[in-house]
Image 1 (cartoon, helix red, strand yellow):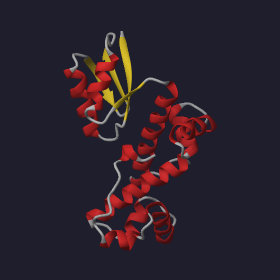
Image 2 (cartoon, rainbow, N blue to C red; image 1 turned 135 degrees about the vertical axis):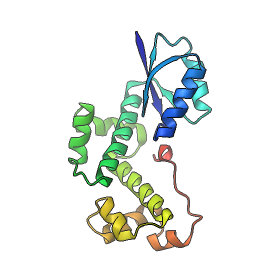
Image 3 (cartoon, helix red, strand yellow; image 1 turned 120 degrees about the vertical axis):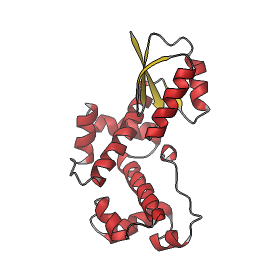
Amino acid sequence: MTHHLHIKNMVCPRCIATVTQVLTEQGLDVKEVKLGEAVVAGHVENLAEVDAALHQHGFELLQEKDEQLTDLIKTALLAYQRELEQGTMPLTTSVYLSEKLGVSYQHLSKIFSQHTHTTIEKYLIRLKIERVKELLSYGQFTLSEIAYQLQYSSVQHLSNQFKKVTGVSVSDFKKNPSIERLPLDNLE
């Protein structure tokens, strides 16, 4: 018998390693950990203790089905963004999410908006803008290269969206390194 734990705020491979370590330290027999979910053997006796241990590292157990679905949407949007960057032309966001999660986009959109107080589209834009900030901070790519990599229709479109989301222009961001990037698990 296995038990599936749905875990909020997992956004990277280091999160997987940390959650694996925390669950193992809690005495659980970890079978698999992936973004947003861990599979453990047997029954979990004290979910409150596991949740408290996860909280110390910035994670949290998701108990409600709609919260779990919201987290799955966020994880799928990260994967969608990675596919964009790799140059594969994924389907539209709505078709991609519906196919990946096996739920109608209308339902996904409704649940996501109720739990995050933003739309899927606005969340994806924020994800992309955080990635733009990351790439700009490296100084390895021009804005044109970043726009192409993230599949913006133009540099102007990227610049306008950047200013709208961050409140500063791309050039001001480049000049002022004190403008902080947001952790992906804080994008609401």
